[in-house]
Amino acid sequence: MATAAIISLAPMVKASLVDTERIVVDAKISSSGAGAHAPRLDLHPFRTYVIRPYEVVHHRHTAEIEQELSLLINKQVRVAFTPHAVDLVRGILTTAHTWLIKPVQEPDVWKVIRTMYSNEPFIRIVKDRAGFQRYPDVKYVIGSNLVDIGFEIDNRLNRLVILAAIDNLMKGASGQAVQAMNVALASPKQPH
Image (cartoon, rainbow, N blue to C red; front, side):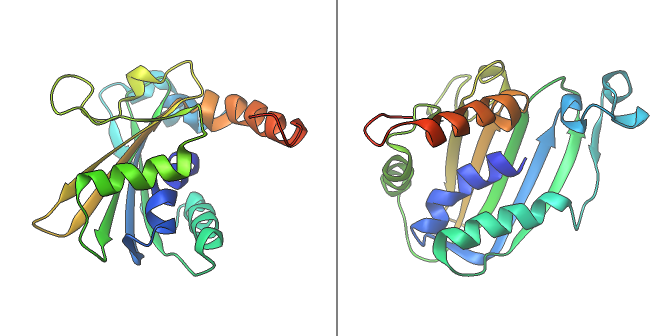
């Protein structure tokens, strides 16, 4: 959950587009995100037809999200974070609600994301005007190391909503570990 939240919010925070004192992240997580020793209620058979909020405030991932975003700009970033257990076997979808501190248009947000992630092969911007792939959806990242990021500008409330979808067993775990190893072991001239 922290991976999806950090990757989707980092460009906006780094570009000083959003109020870093008021960020709200809502996460939907699959049963496989509960870990190898999950309590009975987190096993998939008990999550059928479930959308269950848990650790609504003071979730352990809040500190990690705040830490990484704060390091990015050398200033304290404050995040409210609430996860929900949902009826999925794998995948995470985060929805971040941020408030703009300056006027932006859709091309500005595209540019900010592209500037930060232009050399990142596993990050895709998903924002179609119509159809099934209007926003990120875990269905399209399952089994991959991809992060799909999408957004929408709410001009009425001066809000920027940023969404991210990942496969928690890949990008949230093993795929991320392999990618980090490749970055650590790559020569300075090789892409990661």
